Length: 212
Image (cartoon, rainbow, N blue to C red; front, side, top):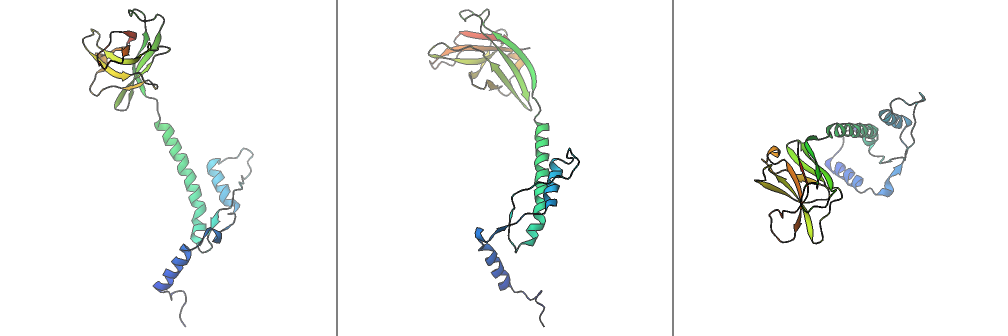
């Protein structure tokens, strides 16, 4: 007598795989996993229920194929593992999302600037985030006159050199050029610039402050 458990041919295996691949959604049926599965998941989310009782969770029955017993066996373990991984990722993300270091800051003001409206204020700070430095500028209520735009500058104390960080941006963040030492260009200046294509400072400053 031939042992049916070992009498398989490659044709039989191929036919079985074809039959499984041909299954449609209509061939699936739904059944509920045992309550112990959902209790195990609940134990990961809330290992100590407040009333001391076993926590039971009802959930929609997952689809299964009757021919795939191994999927029914590892499915609950995979669900619990997925929750554990999600919690671990959340913890790592929260831990790594530390505040960046503020290494210098200043209050910006229109005081003492010829031609600038009085009472304008803002602030600027230099933020070191990893290997890069950013200048964050808040211009408050300062706005350019009609037909002009605002530009952010870093200037040497003796006005012997100045670096443009570009036009004012909605988010207020500007990359410090690589190799630039902030302590050599500590003055933050906000100028009003005409649309004339000239990259030089217009000489019309509205806000200014020195980083410390």
